[in-house]
Amino acid sequence: MKDEIKQGQEEIKQIQDAMKDEKMVKEVVEIFENEVDKEVTDTKKDFEVLKVDAKKEIDILKRKNYLEAVTNVNSWSETEKATALIVSLRCDALKILQTLNEKPKSNTGIMKT
Image (cartoon, rainbow, N blue to C red; front, side, top):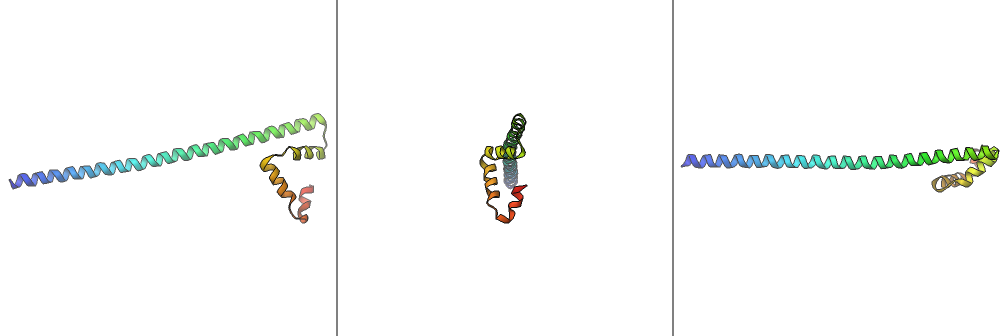
């Protein structure tokens, strides 16, 4: 009888150990899945940033090509071309130009060139 009890206790211990191992495997799988989800999310965010940056670059090139075409058609001088460029600035580009114009008078040589 004692042997049967001892054997039953050993079987229970083996089952408990197997359950601990299964739980540990589930935790590792869950951690791995979370990391993969995070990597996928980060990659999607990076892709969106690159997509927006590429769109901005294309817009800049379109504007530059348009300005060059209009300059050639109208035979504008460099001053007229610069004026047209300044008038066409929007959003961040306009803010940057305004910031440059607000610099102290000692830096105005930069703007004259």
